[in-house]
Image (spheres, rainbow, N blue to C red):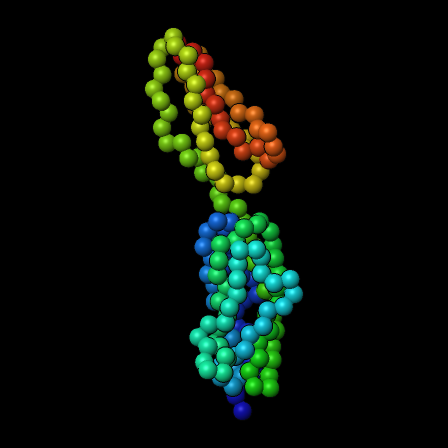
Length: 166
């Protein structure tokens, strides 16, 4: 008789990030060869799908692959069952979906001219909450900053630099 059937992968899956491709394979051991997999509970988060991989003619498969591009932040759980011969095993898995990191996308600001109006925005993407901008160092004399008002919450509007440089 072989070893007992079990799902070997850790119950906490690697973190996924909204908008980024995710791929993870859940593996098992024991039993009598290839496995039949079944997902239950609420299933996988929106944007991710699970499918058995490396299947034979009897539709028994060696591992279970989770792939896709997650859509919503949160901590999700699902139950995965595995069958081999007369044996079965199950494990509850957890996956955390995070927002992308905040990144400033503006790389250059236009040059200004002394004693002429100046206005330019600094843009960012990512995160899930309102942006709180600050400047490290000082702006040239005559310029100031403000967060551009947003029509909704959370506010992820740009930072505006404006004024008349001296």
